[in-house]
View (spheres, rainbow, N blue to C red):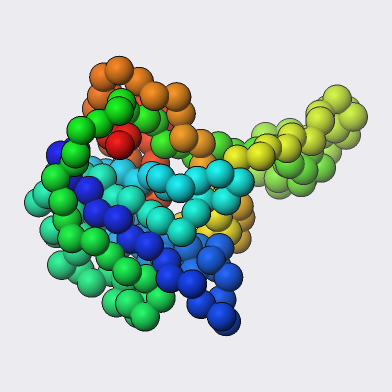
Length: 184
């Protein structure tokens, strides 16, 4: 991960920042899924309660150039501004940027477990009173799954700064439970 590229969504009177970032992220998800190499990670350098207006891609120069050559964000060029692919400057540390799945609806989870055949209706009814709804203040994006087509909130955690990089692969969302991206 020796290079990066920043992509910033521009202010627009018709579309809120979150909508534009979700559209940009959806395009990236499709492009990374089509590449299928798991060698590009992402971060949101300006994240707080929302992901922010800047998406950062991390990877080797060749991988980022290959992704850029696909023109994956061509339909959004009026709504975002992209930096050139640039060498990573002095890093402060490395971070895991991962997806967090929040179990926000125990009843829905039990219905799914019954539908999938993991539990009987009776078992689900017995477990339901003991489950609690979970909440999080992590930033999130509305995304649509490529595999199943369902809409959901993708919660994103930027882990603590680590003193050394950890190698690994990234999902088609550019996220990983163990691989780090440089933080600067």
